[in-house]
Image 1 (spheres, rainbow, N blue to C red):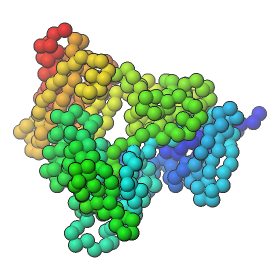
Image 2 (tube, rainbow, N blue to C red; image 1 turned 90 degrees about the vertical axis):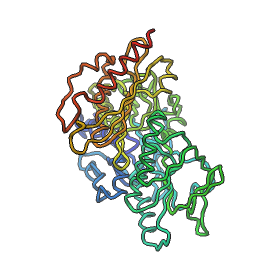
Image 3 (cartoon, rainbow, N blue to C red; image 1 turned 180 degrees about the horizontal axis):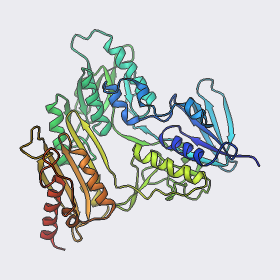
Image 4 (tube, helix red, strand yellow; image 1 turned 120 degrees about the horizontal axis):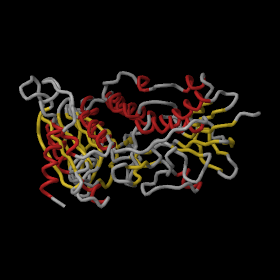
Length: 466
């Protein structure tokens, strides 16, 4: 009996986790696996790129968990620099283009995994394609940015080296820190009221002040209109709608990412409000028995808001891959959803959120109260104690926890994990107050700041009544 063939489109976290898990469950005699990857690398940490750029991670290859050669040694036919350009669902085949030679060929499949990831948002602006303008999503993107930085750092610059980061989300602030670490004068331009739109504006204001205090110039409500170039076609400045120009030897786009779903859209696969592919709990594409999808190209269920959202994170992608690989290999697993937990840092400031922001809660039709407290990350008398601010949202009538945001010094961000567990469990803020969290002066005040915020939220719920 001939082996079935699994075709995987995309060779990073979700795709190769799915392939690897399927291979654990079925050997080559039962399942042939072919994986197409448009880049040079497989199974790497895209989240680590800013730390490689900033010099905290010494070598690019430190970010690679498993090379194409290592996958091939496990009987997974990885074809790098090969892009799938068409899906023929009726014929059960994909058309792939070799990016080096330009040749194309069809490959049939019995089972298909779409793990096409996401791509950096590139607004249609004059000069956006100039040399020195970089979006950061893949290791190939990081490699191109590093080539630009090395070129710039090899030139004499009487006024010093300058970088402009467009956008102040996670990628934006992390790349700002990385470029500061390389000796660049960094300006961050963003359209919002405050940086980090994943936070409420009052919490984003804390990030704004801290970034400015670290020497990062942060300009709010800045609408970029064009990238100005020199006679060689290289970026030299970023212009805004107010007529201001910000000189730049390198420009990094940190505006965000969007699901890479052109293939799925062209094939008529179901997409959600954010443009991500829609799947069931087993990560099967809705309405398609032999097609799965996972990673940054899908929408997932937000367990708090009760709707699908596009939340591109490597943690989710790897879990999706495990679930998909189990299904392909004849096992059973599900991915129930997420609560939207994310952490980041800029220099010494840690930033975390989970659950809903105020505007998310309003869009979901929820009535809520908020509580905000400022404490310290350790006992106040312990050497090195740093300030930490916690904001908490709770449902007005029931007291159900809806979201938590944290901004503070070392040891602040990972406290959000307590809130993530509470959200997943559907806990109320009353229940959170009695959690038996670990205490010792080097780690926490007697009342952990998350519990102090919960106490204040309980009072707000009671004061609001029904």
